Length: 491
Ligand code: ADP
Ligand code: GLC
Image (cartoon, rainbow, N blue to C red; front, side, top):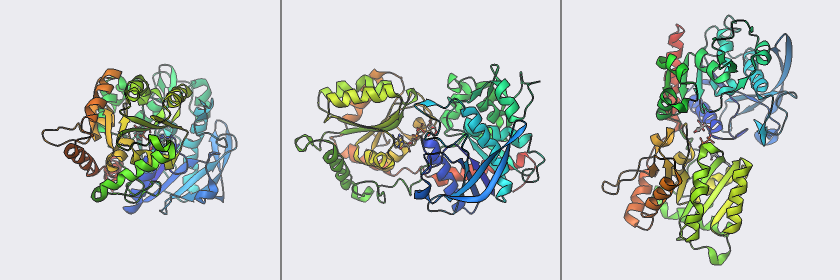
């Protein structure tokens, strides 16, 4: 199959969160399974072209926006370790800025920037001789591709045989625009807008467009698929997901275990595996050496780690609500790597200054440190308010770092509460979104830390889990085949 993936993020070039990891991991796996995969991304100002050997091509495409044409020069690179081509759209107007979605605040023209990306994908494919079977769009940013496929490009020879698949990574961000502004740019009339597939609550809603126009819709875990269809977690999209119910399903994200493997990880201080699990501690020692003075490095104090965007979704309120009660007693240490909302960064730094040897706070985006923190911690905290899938808990399991998670979305699908009687389970879970429930679960988890039998069992159970991207890539291929059947093709 020829798969054209269009996305706002792709690791390692441009990453804010898990979307980037998943776009890259799926492409890698499909390619390894013999498919022709191409990725289309904006050429953001923050992309390090030299480092990733991204070079300009001779191609410039013209992209219809409204009644006129706009232009993008194409740069080309490859997904590291593969021959998967990644095409980068250079545009001074839209993408040549330091941020992906914004700096501190979102860019005011994000709707237009990503409309351009979505439209450009259709002009790019013929220019690079791609005749896609599948156009795979991710989140609201590229949802317009699903509409373009069924309208403006329906009879275009490069796309008549293509089906559209839309994957929802986070339904909380929907891409809402003023119809008067965006519809003319997208080439749709204002007449007939009300009540159409483009409209939700009087505005243009990109998420709804993706849901309604795609041949198949997926989201990133089975539990999140149920939550967004049947509960307020759907943030107003429940009705549309129900209309599309027969074409909608959850596929659990997978991890790229070539990137996230404690035995081969180049970012961590000491490699280890299930056979050499005691070496994990060398990483903890290294983190302590880097961060606290010699007389404060007691190795036996458990480290509760977290690697996260700092937004309300991630349950930062719960974390801030209970950190002090734990550090005050000196029983635990926290190691938090996060970036995002300034109010959270600030609150964490305040605690970090108050307890400099017990609350280790690293802000900013740091790929190497994310591996180091996960490898060095004893527990990984993911107390999310909602979580479509979540990847850090999946990585933590592989690193023998015990996850403590709120049982929501993909967290519920990947972490099983430890049962000391049967010795089954991989972490600790709680349901109620409250500081008390989170703190009680941390207490419960800490009880096993000094019990060698349970502690060993728990960590081994986690390390034996297999949430590989290969599995999820295969599920996507099934969905792609169903999507092609839906448009009358057999593959
Ligand atoms: P989300 O996509 O909602 O942010 P996920 O758990 O799916 O959540 O993915 C988060 C990804 O981003 C993981 O790969 C994690 O390691 C990474 N990450 C989050 N914050 C940082 C940071 N400050 N520095 C480096 N990597 C980070
Ligand atoms: C989103 C979600 C996260 C998910 C990631 C990759 O950013 O917040 O839960 O793991 O996408 O699908």
